[in-house]
Image (cartoon, rainbow, N blue to C red; front, side, top):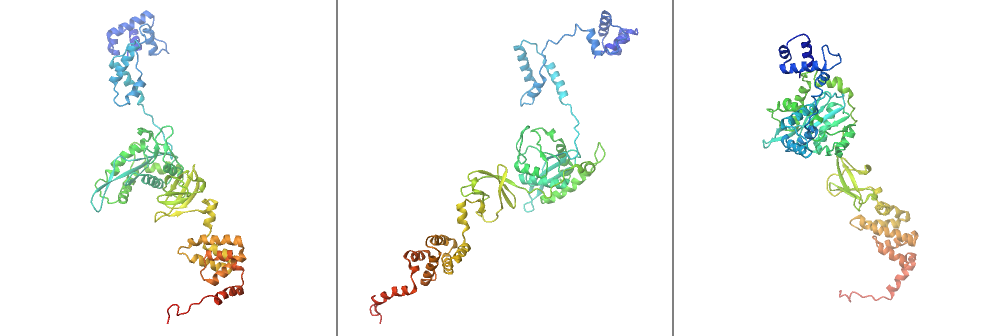
Length: 512
């Protein structure tokens, strides 16, 4: 940049233009031109105190400085287009030239086009130091590098996956190995991590993996239901990082590299035969890493965590989160849903509705529109079992299910001892007790029609014929009125058959 002020100052002291050019690192023609312009405009040394170098240049060459006649490129648009696959500066410059030709404007040369874009990118790459609050954020992710264990039987090397969690303020880290990256491993890793830290943070920043985020969106991401439930249990909010934006979780990204060097690489020669054995080795290296002093500031991850961050962590709940899985089921016409080949009852009002089912190790909970409508102890063992709650049934179904052997016998005893014996005989006459329920229900209706006195008498009459009467014989006695006949009438009615009947002797049947 030309030093206008210094040239005028040296000229006022009588120094030659040659020496001024050498002192200000410019040509003699430039010095001559500036001195000549100052004399024409009456600008002399000393200058005004508040006159800047830019204003001085504007005064000296006001009529020379004219607006550029060439069109400046839209650097913001160029930067957006450069992020797209296959787009180059050469292509954008050609498009820029075509646009200028259509609008009858003069384009820049390719070198100047690139120069303007380079200046723009240098400004956009400016970085800012973001201060984190203690106990505010926790960043989690799976490490890109895997570890391995040895199969005891085959000697095969099995890859295992490394979970990494880092507190943003203190950089205090947690590392654990898992056999897979499924939902159970992801949730278990968080539960163990919170136990390791002794508290939770207000914000949890994961990546956009399916076990954590069902639908990635910067404005309204859809969090996995189990993951959201776990976050609510620990009073934390899940704010996923933007897609392909590693700077949203820089601490865990940097810690992944540190873990790869100081833990995984350090264990490369150690042979482990189970995930538990590998995790014990990882915990030893993790303790060393967290206690290692910082290079550019005092203290270590552990000392900063204990002294400054741990007091600000949220307290853990009384019990750890219990892993649960969610499913959607349809309530069938028998007011039951099927979950893992077991059947659980739902209030009959929800027949043919879709419900959300939360499954834990011991409990099955059913929700409709985020409202829990019922729960059951989880069934285990032989598939096809039923868990039915009587309150879930329609009224007519309740009446049927309420009848059992004890209730039939209790009702019969209130009628009379003979009726109780008859009921017991009917129930015991079937291989399956429930097969006699209909006959017992029919006896109830006979009591309503003929009265309990006649029913008791009919049962006594039937028991005089056989110790195992049935419903049909008791009904016949009531319809024919035999229950009203006395014992003497019964004997008399049997006499004619003995007097006037034909009696065949033994000779008729060929007996000797």
